[in-house]
Length: 455
Image (cartoon, rainbow, N blue to C red; front, side, top):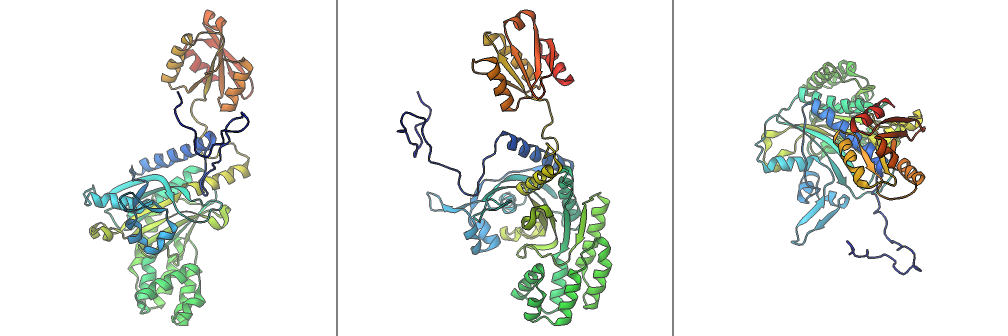
């Protein structure tokens, strides 16, 4: 009895040979083999360990959501970037393109009745219909967090410190934390008399560093010059005094600047120590919903796709008529991009370990029964697994050499052939596959574990 019918597209008339499958991966997606998956699991575990230390609790949301959740947040134009579809009841749905809005929706469905402040972390796959290139895929993974119900500089410092802690824990050596504050720009543009769409347009030009465009939009040359001076500060927290002078010369008293200064002081006190910290007051990401501090983490080795993390303070709960929960603060970390940066670093350093801890824990032991009844081996397999020792069992009867080659190809670190003489004597020999070193011991779980740990 077969479990599955032949796949559509399989060529079953191939001169008696194995079927030829006509399928391939969808564009912009990837397969992950055991080695890659081990690395990804190690990174996810690392993120979760840091999250626990920072008091974040893991949550999860569905892979697909109502389409209006994302059009309400980003406008109807976003549909072209989504995997949107109709279900059999003609409802508009989409695969999620990011994880912040779904978490907000989850909280809204509870009518905001959550312990406040709440610290949530999350991890999952997201989908965007865009051109695939290095570091960007149509299916990608995101790790992130949200703090709800406690706005202010201290919350912002906690969120940025959490992101920095993850980056530090990965062992990535060269990355830059860039921090700005949308509120400062809003104060300046409001003082210049800009309103509505004119503010958004000016913000976008500032984010691009297009100062000629700013002047062409009607902002006077003196103000443009001051804004350009702000953009050129690009130093650490010490640059805020210079920024204050420039902003004051424009006749602006910015409370947001005081908040940023307080946030940076808290960040320092929390022990965040990025390799490079730059205060960039013209960073203006997510104009439609970011309202306060904004930050980005950049990795130069990734080139044009160098941003691996971004976030800040934002307002979204007004979409659910829960304005009292705004503003929130959070970030999204590009799981795949950080891994790519770590792989580049490991390759440059000649390291076999990309993510700290990916090769930790007991090595896999391959147990190979040879000319013995399996019933004489299975209790030992069970005892070893119960003790925490990973064990893979040879399921095919073949020559020992082929079984050892299979164990090595599988990635097992140790192998143990159990034959009639081993059963009779109660002694076995464990072989380390990387260099052939052997150790003899009693055929018990305790003795085998000790032998492996001493090899």
